[in-house]
Length: 325
Image (cartoon, rainbow, N blue to C red; front, side):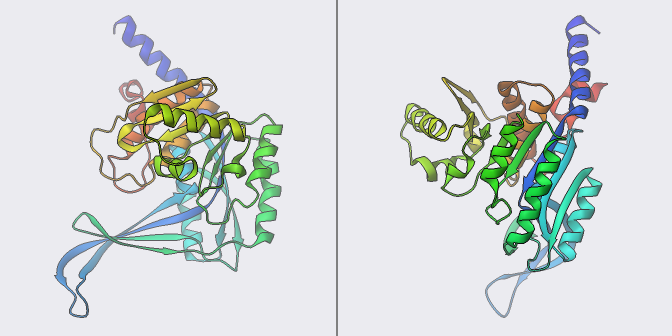
């Protein structure tokens, strides 16, 4: 083994140990991603729609649960705080998260159903998606805030995964509490009111989400100017814009970093944003700087979009020297 290869291997081993010590707290809207796979051989006589003969079912953690799953896949110690219904889907999520080594604190609310996204797949194409969801009660959300304060003491980085399902009604308070304890706060945003995220360390909108907040842009200079104005107005440490085939761009005070996309083949983009914010959080918790964390997250996004459905990037995929060891 030459010296350069030995150094790479040593660096990868050191990073692997740091990842195992990383502690990440994920708070947000969880859901269950359910996939029905089957053959399409005929059209229904009742309406001009395909008939799918379902022969296989898959279930995966979705939303904030997928964020937690992605962080745990990198060997980090992950806690998840959210709300589910007292139903079969909630029980299924608990089972899946336990399998994925996520310490889940899931409050039950009898008045809601656990959010489920059901996708029907035929001939390797998504034919239909059906969503089942209700908003959790304020009583349960208040209890979650108390648990957040307790869990905050035992993490290095906080992720707030906002899917607009009502689970982050106290997000402004959570950000303030985390910053008071000097914990970096990463937010995956939703909607057009970003004032809720004031003071966050990093906000990670995708291209369409950012456009809905700052308006369209005609050039990279205009994008930079508008994003920096947003960042300054809300006191954000940084804004990371995920731009699909264009890669991602990090805006910080006085700086801009653009990282080109690394996907070799795009199969499914669902959940890629979850992977990005999870990987950045784990890398920061492991002692990496923001730019390095973004570059690694970009690599991870290129890996998961080549897989079907919500997926994770494994350490040996991100860091090839680990696989050799």
